[in-house]
Length: 190
Image (cartoon, rainbow, N blue to C red; front, side):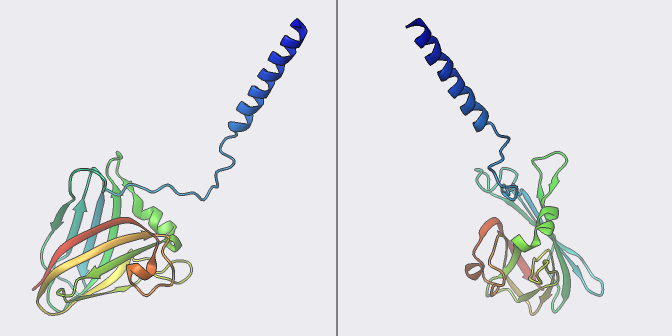
């Protein structure tokens, strides 16, 4: 009986050890391409007028993230000029890191998995066209041209989508995917 008890204890320990070793397998079962969503605390849109003029900067900062209790802080450096073409660029940062982590680099490196949408409301007279493309020839939206029209006031919604359908018709509903960041700026054209 004593020998049987020792055998059972040994087999139990051996089974437990094999379970521990097979469950601690250095995450071999997790695919390398799984991409954890990054925290984006700051969005900076820079609009440089073609042919000279005043650069307009739009900044949205939400240091506690979209899920935090504090709303984003918006800063628009000034109005857009009438009938002007602007070279546009955008930057995404995680300022909870020190130094701040530049998420723009990740978006650019994974351009086929991202797209930035610039959506003016009906009262804002601006048009946006994409300048940069991903490796498959579809828009990413890190570089673009924004053209202002007549005097108007409205909003510009800027949305970064992860894994959108490409190609799409330029609308969020057709693009699908998940939203990484969604900010809306009050804009004036004068």
